[in-house]
Length: 161
Image 1 (tube, rainbow, N blue to C red):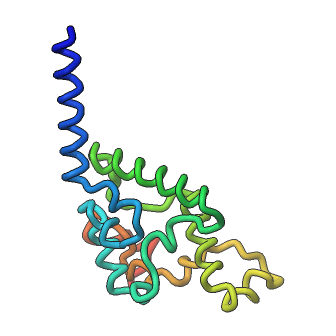
Image 2: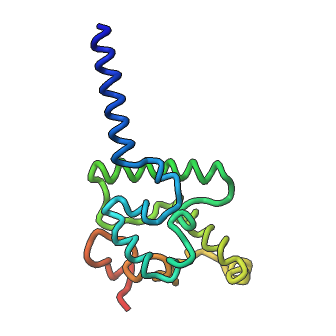
Image 3: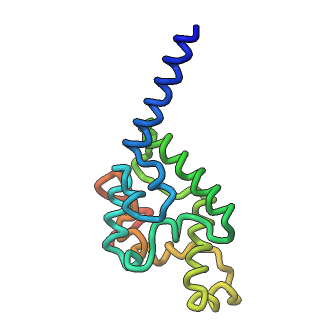
């Protein structure tokens, strides 16, 4: 019995050590956009971001994680990371990757946070503010295509210009 326990612990240590060596999980605690691109399904998002205007001033976390407080930031980073690992590893990634409603709220809040002076009259104006910033500014973050595993986005959602 003791022998099996020792072998089990040894197997666990080797497995965890191999994971840490191969996956470098500590790198995911940082903010580098190249870390987000470690998963091949993110290649088009990274490539489009790299050639878009925000590349010089942002990283993925600047738009995709909340910045209202330390705890929200790390909770969302963990939730997003676990979701991505499960979906990408299990082959559940949809062909057209879209932000979930809660992610859209985070992204919208970050657009307003960074561009507060510019959008203040829009947000506080008389007209209802019901659209997302990227409804009009589609190419700003991820280029004309947005993110997709398909060669072309559907033209109904993203009209070709």
